[in-house]
Structures are given as C-alpha cells and as structure tokens.
Length: 400
Ligand SMILES: *Cc1c(COP(=O)(O)O)cnc(C)c1O
Image (cartoon, rainbow, N blue to C red):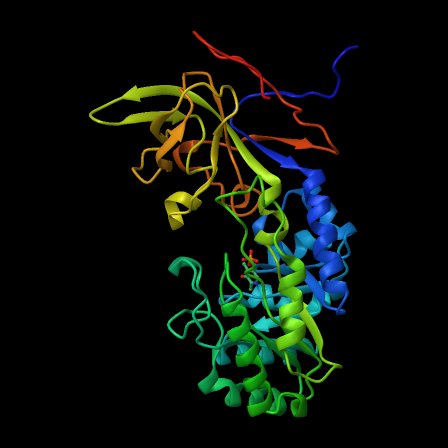
C-alpha cells in the first residue's frame, strides 16, 4: 500500500501530538467545569492554528497580551465575550481597538493605565469593562524570570494603590469595574504558592469590600507547571487537584465567576522539537553534539536555564556524556550540559520534549534562521515525518 500524507520535511521541525492535546484539554475541561470555572487559554504559549482549533472546540476562551493576539483570537473564531486582555504596556491604539471589539475585559496593570483607559473610553463613549490586576507580593517559587507576583515585578497594581484604583473606577462613569485579576508566575510546581494566592485573594476581596464595588468576577491567572524531567510518564498535569484547591480554598460569594488563564499546562507536553545531529565534536574533556536546531527555535534553556528531556530517537546503543548545543553564535545556545545519550553520530535524530509551549511562539529570526516546519501526529500515529536525508551520511534511519 502506498504511504500517503507523509510530508517529507527538513529538520529541525516541531512535532505536535494532537491526540495528547485532546486528552489534556478533556481533563482540563472536566476538572474546571465540575466547579463552573472558566478557562481562558494563554495564547502566547502557542498560537499554532490547529492547536488553537482544539482549544476552541474544548470550549475555552483566550487570554491575550497584545491587540494582535486579540485580533488573532477573533479571526480564529473565538467569541469576543470569552477574550481577556492583559499586559503592562498597552498602547493607546491597542486600548481603543480592544474597547471597540467588545471583549470580556481589559486586565488593568496600573493606576496610570486605568486613567488612560478612562480617557479613551470617554472619548469613544464606550463603557470600558475593567478588571484590576493586583500584585499580591507573593513568591511563586519558580525561576526569577517567570515570577510575576512580587512587588518588585512590573506586573499588577500594588495593594497599597488598590483603593485609589477602586475610587477612580467609581468616579469615572466610562469605567465598568468587573473584578480582580491575579497571575503570580509560571511553571509553578507545588500547591503552596496557589494556596497562598487563595489566601491573599480572600483577604484582599474582604478588606477592600470588592463585592461592594459591584464585582462579578475573579481571575486567578495561570502558572500550573508541567513535568519537564519526566514528560513520558507524566504527560498531563493534575488539573483535578489544581481546580479542587481553588474550590476548597477560595472564600468568595458564590455568584462571583471564577476564571483561569492556563497556557503551558494545556499545550506544553503535546509538542516536541526534532533535530538532527550535524557534528559530534571532541574537544578538551567535552563531547559537543552540535544539532541543527538552536535557541532560535527553543530559547527556554538559554533564557531561563530550563531543562528539557532530550532523547536520541535513532539509536539506543551504548551510553556517553555529551553537551547538546545548537549552531547559533551564542554560548548560551545549549540544550543540555553533561547529559547521557546513546553513542551519538552525525545524522542521528534527537527529540527534545515539552516544546508545546513557549518554544515555537518564542522563535526568532536571529542569524537569519527563518522559520522551520512542523508535523502533526493525529490519533495514534507514532510518526508522520519522512526526513530529507543529508550529505556524506555515515548513518541514518528514519524517525521511529
Ligand atoms: C503568560 C500568562 C499566563 C499563562 O501562564 P502559564 O504559566 O503558561 O499558564 C496567564 N496569565 C497571564 C496574564 C500571562 O501573562
């Protein structure tokens, strides 16, 4: 039988497992809908159109951080009433267009922004639906670059200025205050920061009489982490435990709708980056495996010191210690230091796991790299790529 629908593509490429995506979305959906919670997918994690269709079909809304993202979500068929818009630096144009688009709310990150939104809403004669993002000054116990809820971070309104913001909402007839927003960080891998978030939200809600100001919603943000060390055995995060924690620990009036903005936890494990070994270079005390993907396709290791599981999918023979590096002219262009792989040779394919979030969406054109291809795995298919062979190859086998 002829093999059909198998693209012949060059490496490196992203590989998206749509079956795993569907299973992940189903569990997130059942975990949240049990309590009537709403999920808005953080589009910045991955805006691949097929992933986004899955998100839409699962019934989730979208969390955007730029006007382009808002417009992309609208073009992708999401209802305006399911879209929220955050970001510390919304431009006047972004605010104006967002107000006219009829989205659910703007998440306001400073008193200064609130003032500008009020002025623009008054000029347009449009009521601005605003949610105040509060900075609760809480440690998320994750990498400093992805901690967002400490008072030294640029995000959110300091608790010390919340009263001023509430008064401004009350006095500006074009501002329609809807509630509070929190997002304390990303890749949070224990329950403790989320428990602390619930306590802070309860305290702030009661101390500032948020219900008395007419609030109807609270948004607890995202941040649920994934297992980068063992993605094979642990491909889906514990959504049930995550939502149960908020159900148990939030102490707010029942009619206040609860919203979450999950990014990484929904798409992170469904993606991989497949890359080919160009050279195995022996230097002083080191063996460098130089691959054809770089920080331009996956910047997390260079940016956050992130760890991704790397597997040689061509061979399983032997064991040797290597540094796996990309071709980019930066020393931080390194995917793994002192990792154990089978004896690895030019032409072997390596699979870098957990690249479904903050990989393709953070890719860049440094070194004029251009964009790379992608492959979708559907249902139970194990492999759908036939990789273009390379020159002078001593050893090569197709994707397994
Ligand atoms: C990035 C972001 C999220 C999503 O974070 P994850 O860690 O991917 O779940 C949610 N809310 C806001 C405001 C964000 O900026």
